[in-house]
Image (cartoon, rainbow, N blue to C red; front, side, top):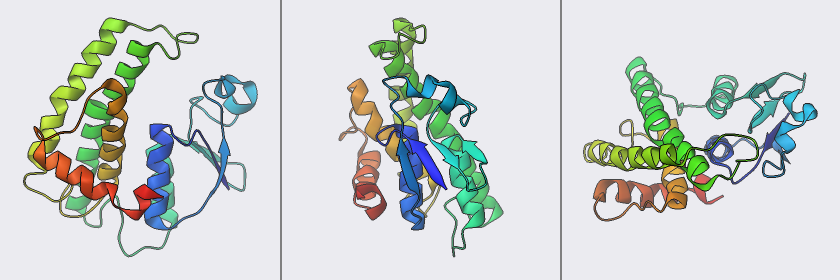
Length: 203
């Protein structure tokens, strides 16, 4: 099997951190997004959404969307604990926070970056005002995470989970929007520093 990716891209990084946490090694194929390689017929034949990352299995089956890829490996890997939760309440809480961080944080950051910078204006309509609105939504969401981390060690509870991976990638990405995690968000800052030391992140 192999993963088609642009390694620094946030969605690809989510999968990479997840696989490192699980101790799974998969062949990688770099896709030149800036150059439009993902727009080619060859790539779109394997990626339903035309984006990275995409997992291609040995039988030719392909799976796109980073969390779907992680869920696949969660299902086929023997492990004592799951980053998606081990009990019904853990699974529900992790799913809840995973979706909150995605929709209110990571995706808003994507929209802000793409619309403010116009990085892909050759292939999509960019609306600067929407970019700035999205940036503000990210700023407004960060205190929600800080408040949650005042009561738990990690985003969805006392164990590291896929929600932490998504939040960590988001917190790293928003530097591109000149948004910093600083002393005004002490719990989030402490959490970010701790997660930064994980072997899966540093690899």
